[in-house]
Amino acid sequence: MTDSDESWNRLLETARLELVPLQPHHADELVAVLDDVRLYHFTGGEAAGLEELRQRYERWSRRVSPDGTERWLNWVILRKEVARALGTVQATVVTDDGRLIADVGWVVGVAHQGQGYASESAEVLIAWLFDCGVGEIVAHIHPAHAASGRLRRRSAWSRPSSGYSGNVAGSARGAPCRMDLRGGSSRQLSPNSCHR
Image (tube, rainbow, N blue to C red; front, side):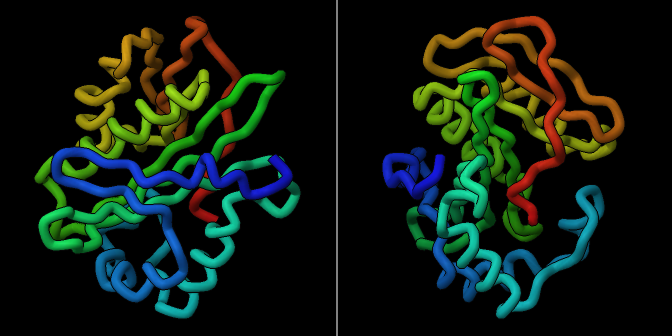
């Protein structure tokens, strides 16, 4: 993973949404979408200002970590009919013993929550990652975060797309939920590295 492989830099689509590879200019619209303290209740941190967000997206647009060990995949979630940014989805992909593992995350602006956008985005992302050969998906979901817990229960975590089958482990405070196509348990990854 030493270079930015453009085959991982894909537009993903659903009936209502486009997941467009994140670029620094997306900060202009996302800064307002992500500027709500309620978004950081379970994850910690705070909203970034415009310049900080642009710099972060500039780093992420390289698609590969500086040491070459992680593939950084980030998309802006756009509603097709109005081309409006709703939030972001992310996946950090690493190789462990020749096996691809993705650590995923999502954030949808408060004004756009409760309409299925996070579920729709997560499902297409997870299905695409499996199609790309990822063997394990991990998401760090706080046990008190009811909306993300519901998303995990009703999305590809519970009903893997494209005929995949796997086991889903629940989370305990701070532990990741995971889907492992091998079955059984697997090592625990560090918290979502997309949120550097």
